[in-house]
Length: 140
Image (cartoon, rainbow, N blue to C red; front, side, top):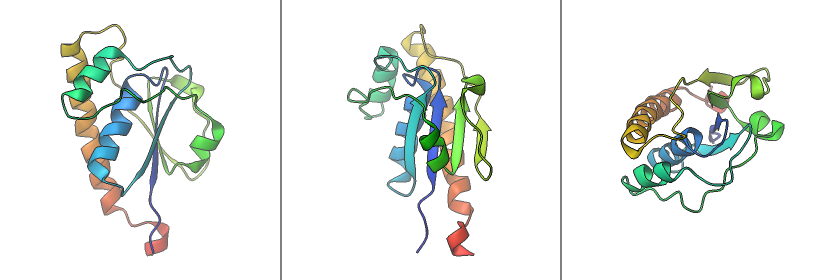
């Protein structure tokens, strides 16, 4: 039996980039990857433009609530992907860390946020391909 890989997406407010990335990975992975997101300084609500552009794909984020980044969440993850949160994410040995440099959707219009969403979607598909290609420790 193989273990399901866990991916944690982290940004500052957990109201835009990390929420989009988590939702897109969850959508494309279809249960093959455990997905979480968090923020170093979470906002109170999801960015309205993010709700709009994700809704265009049939992904409803209206019930999502920005979550505070915890050490436990980082420890549980196999892959931690940061998006503009600097050094706020603790580092643990044996974890794979990626930093995705992406524009922050805060204060941007729907057209700009759509472009950010599309770039995140491209990276998520690439990540999913990598995760599917990498055998877990249990497979060796």
